[in-house]
Image (cartoon, rainbow, N blue to C red; front, side, top):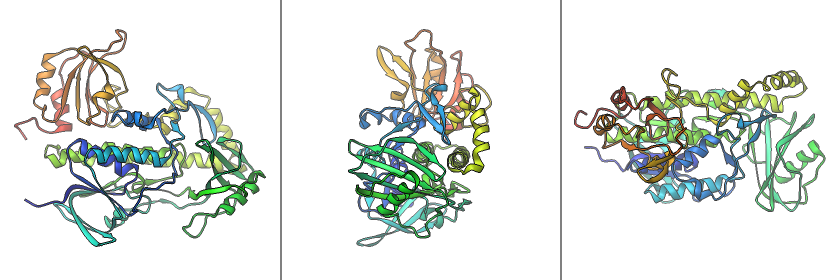
Length: 490
């Protein structure tokens, strides 16, 4: 039997890589996370996450660690106002949460579960074989090798994993640039959805009680030719040209920039190598969709890798990662490109904005756009069967015996769940053959008027089987499809 240093090597200790590590450790899978940085980033490009990510953190018991979180009900699509409450549970997401805090919380969770986090390790080579992968890593003490069953690249837009695996990254080059600065000492009017005029666009956001973030887009300024952040005077000059406001006397804390470059990996899997997060897709950061897409990727991937490593994954399970997540990434790239044109396009885009604004008065259009931006409309599968199939299980209050709980509480350990809502012994007997890998819980809804259905729920919270009458019809087929042959037959 081949010796491995770890089951999974994760490259990149951002939110995606750390979340994947936690998901794997919930399943008892060994994981090493490496990152070239010797310390976590203290600055934060992202300042929040979407409604779907709020649910994903909730089902792992992480939300309480953030303290009080406020969701924003009203947002925009490409600068056109949009009320996200038009769909159940709809909101524009959580804002004002620095990415550094999100990473710290996920890191503490993952390492507390036993993930091995190694900083100052830079991937420089991959030897990809049929049975495993050897990663060559440069460290301050010299080159190290880590042998693993699988490698997952969560290493950002310039992913070395993607390049070494030979995975293409087609898309669109940058056409515009947005400068960003955090500072203290000067007050500006808060503009969370942006001020747009004929010279450009400015977003102003508070960062805690004293600091401010400004994001400036200047029309016809082009894209910088070198990969270096702008100086604070450059940001201040651009702001003054667009709005006439001066921040030159402020105390700068950090500067950065981003562009509208939009690309997506042509495949998320190459044998034993997978991509997630910015390594798999990049786009203009609108609506906190970047961090949310990455978390969604790894919550989908983690339990599938665990099943493969434990030996019960049905044939083709690992391929469903690309099949399910690639369309999601493509949708995000598309909607951010549309929003870029609506939001930042010049006068020539005004007819498009007028038409789009008229369409957005329709409830059906609003629901579709809210679902697309939040991720709340994600459906895995072919759309056949019950409307709940392939959709995420919402948070619901339950009674298990005399104990009050929720559906999210039942998913905290990252195990598949058969939820028996009719106290059906036949259903429980059918599920018992998978009890080594699937939990079965009999529960009732406290609200007698609430809709009831027995369900098979995947570890990522998506529904894989529905029974409206409590019968076990089709359950064994669904269990076999997603979680392999029953115990004793594998």
